Length: 160
Length: 289
Image (tube, rainbow over all chains, first blue to last red; front, side, top):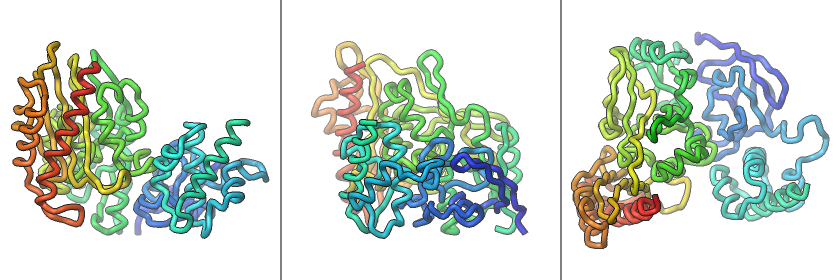
């Protein structure tokens, strides 16, 4: 039997505790132990970006993070996109309005990644958006509507 | 997998003791972007994962008298965001910026890129060209080694049992010097090098090249330091003839395989082209400082 580790972590400002296996990925713990299933697991090898989260502010693939590493860390997932609010984030709203999604599996990861981009660069060019989101694969949209959704949200957010 | 343990020691000595004790079953863990994939694909089955990120300084950048030192586990995004480092070593940033996605660079480190020992690693030729020195700790104390001495074959390094790279030290930047790394890939992003070339050169006040280092990736079992290519630049104005001669030396040094990314012949030919273009970028940067 592997020895399980007790970890405490903050997810979207809420404190959680759980037991995890030493080789268990953070995405697995988020989804299956904490039941935060908004974060999706696609490739499990860091290629698709579906599991994108923020780890102490850094945009990372949660499939490439060990859950035990999250001890004492602050994590932000798609569930924290609009903390303590029933309203949608401008990114979420524009993705709906412009149809920046079809099947939706890539969407949580793309929203988390796009939010990180707009915090760093409120007025990105199309090229900058495409390069920033190069680690988020979408099988449905052909990306055009995703880019336009991010641009529309950025414009609205700049206006405040 | 039954006995897998996760350890996160807070000192270099504790980490090297754990690694030495674990022997072949120990695995250094920094950003995890290779190790997690290798575990998932069952390519490795470690007994102990030694997470080195709690060691003080292993994720930070410092500067002393113009010489930068950065921790081996410093994430790529951190290096790219460090204005002083990025403007002093733009060639290393060229290499780091090409490693995977923003998400991967949020965790992946140069130490991991070097020690994963892929022949096609993007930051390794840039580090070799820059003349970076590895500060290595192990059970028998610490030692230094140039980056070109680390990789001995695909997935293999010269690090002894219990040894790991703690940090990298860059030489102080000479006036009129510059570096660049360029790679050839079919796509602009999220791809693996068909050929990679790192060039670092220094000019005198008259614009004559007084020192150069040229390194190639993805054209041999290990990244290469090509002394003949550097010699073709030294003493010249890095003109067309010198660049062509350097390119020939690069092609001559190649010992590539043919794979889905390119044939042996294609790699040998394009190594010359990519190295010449990298040298031109390095030259422009050298003239600017």
